[in-house]
Amino acid sequence: MPLALTFTRIDHQKGTTKMALRKNTVIHPGIEVTDAYHRVGNVTVTGKTRLVFKVYSLKDGSQFADRDYSCGYDINGGNPISQAYAHLKTLAEFSGSEDC
Image 1 (cartoon, helix red, strand yellow):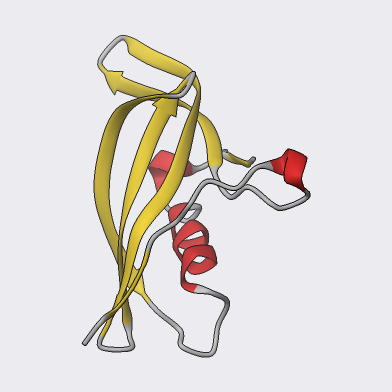
Image 2: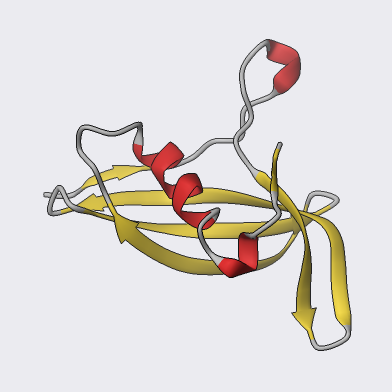
């Protein structure tokens, strides 16, 4: 049975860390969303070797897109959510993004 984890937004004011990426994002030719906020959710580890997850894209708290991704999973590596963010940073569409 796969292990399913769901990312929950965590608040900086409460002394915890928020995991997300910020980047200007083109959603249609000629339409760019500045400082879009991208967060990982619905993370599933399958077969102990693969991560499947969704990235939710938001602006000012309103979601404008979501997309499915997958990548390899290192059972001895960091937590699955951290590995998902690390994978996103290797993709051209998230190059230059900043942690937030």
